[in-house]
Amino acid sequence: MNVLFIVLNEVEHLDDVLDAFVEVGVTGATILDSQGMGSILTNGHKSMKFYGTILNLLDNARPYNKTIFTVIEDDKVLEDAVNAVKEILDLDKPGVGLMFSIPVGKVY
Image (cartoon, rainbow, N blue to C red; front, side, top):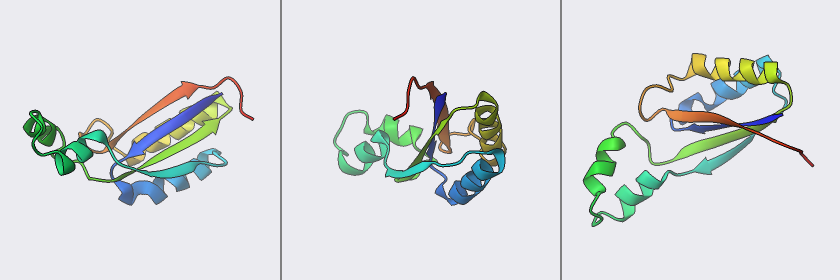
């Protein structure tokens, strides 16, 4: 059993990701509004020494994003969900978002 996290900067793809989840057998997910640290630093703390460096790293980033997470019991469904997201998003491109999974012991 794993929890799959996606931090989605390109929020216009949210519906596509959720549709793909349904197609591969993901039965539920939670979506949170979120904001990255770099966005907060560049928008609210312009006097910080590393402002320029952070701003360069965020060249294509958006100030707000969505964090999606879902607990997936079946390893095949997890693999299918990851592959489906990779077909929708180019996660190698800076500013698109990131995806990772973590093993889960128990869900109550």
